[in-house]
Structure formats: structure tokens, C-alpha cells
Length: 162
Image (cartoon, rainbow, N blue to C red; front, side, top):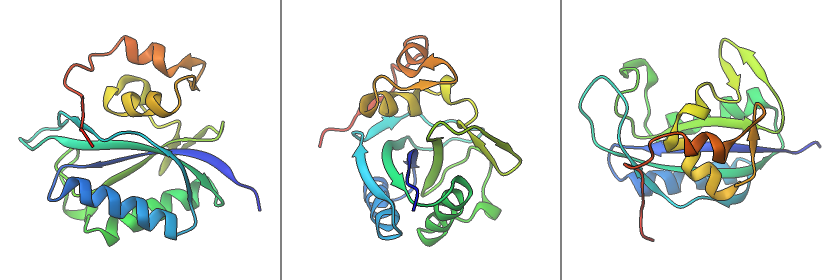
């Protein structure tokens, strides 16, 4: 069985944010992913068209025995299990859980339901801060993630003591 390294961004801004991220990590591990590293939790300002509370975000590095599309399906399944209903959401609105595939090995995927590397990753400090914490030398589309992060405003992103 082939195993690939993937980076997932977990986020929550509804309910028990920290507890929900812990549940998501646990379900992903029980589903067969091996958690190799996880960043600190970061409180980040929300993105979106409606007022909402801040997010807790975290990036985890996992070993995935399944392909990128199966990993996407697994992430969506975990979201549903933890109470996310995408059919009732406002785009960029509040959510109990969000699981995004940032990177899947060195693969590039450009399909309607999946893009890897995650689109706009190099423009999103809320994902780059925790990614660079656990993978400081990582390169995305020929750009060092740390260099991309240095060009962004990350002032509102705060590590949560723990």
C-alpha cells in the first residue's frame, strides 16, 4: 500500500472550537490517517461576508494510505459527522468544522471538486502560519511557504497558549 504525506488545515469558529478540532483529529486517525505532526492552535480573524467570531485553525501533517480524492471524501465525511451542513452555509460564513487539503505529496490536481495545492494557499496567512510552523522549508509551486508568509499580514493571528 502506498502512503503519501498530506497537510490538512482544520478550522472552527462555532461552538467548542478546540474540542471540535480534537474530535476531527481523532476521527481522521481512526479512519486510517497517521498524524505525524500538528501545529499549535491559532486564533485567526474570520473571512466572510457576514459578522462572525474568530476561528481556531491548525495544520496537521498526516500519512494517508488513500488517494487525494478519497482523502477529500474522508474530510467531507468527518465534517458531516461533526455537524457541518454545507447545503445550509453561506460561502465563507461561520462553521463548526472545516477540513481542507492544503498539499498532497507533490501532486497537482486541478479538477472541479479538488485543487491541490489548495487555491490561494500562498495568499492565506491563517493557513501558512501553522503550515510553516510544522514544515518550515516546504515549497509550494516553486515558492518557499515561509517567503510567501513574510509578504502577508499575519498580525491578527495569535497562537493559543496550551
